[in-house]
Length: 158
Image (cartoon, rainbow, N blue to C red; front, side, top):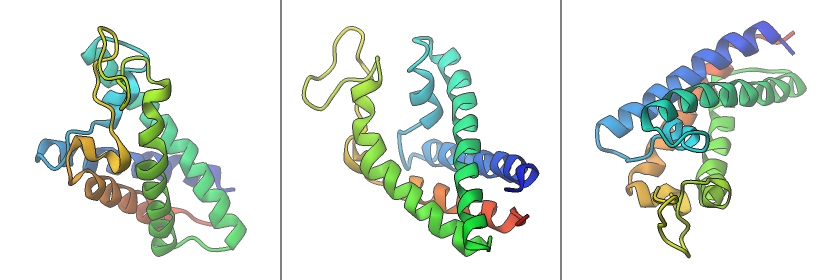
């Protein structure tokens, strides 16, 4: 595995992904802020949660970049379209599997069954993140396609 490219392109791809998701939120396409959701696992303070969540999201992006790099190495190719294809798979996983189970381990998120409580006041994302807006899946899909395409375009095989 090319560690240098994994770190560099994983970092840049995660910045692009996070920026696209933030733009989607800022433009009213979604109410989802993944750094905020991740950060509120560790802190109840909204400002501190955003910073912590950004760092956690960046680290997650590097971990996922390592998985992409392993796939690129095992297939013997790294291209933008292969990265985008992996990004599509990652987006589908996030939307269909990861977001719906988030309330099970998030200490400040209500669940679909039990609703809010004094400590669990964040709205659960629901299937495909639709509780955060009907364009949430599109926002997540576009961001992950860009993540994968950039990582695939920049990564060089060893």
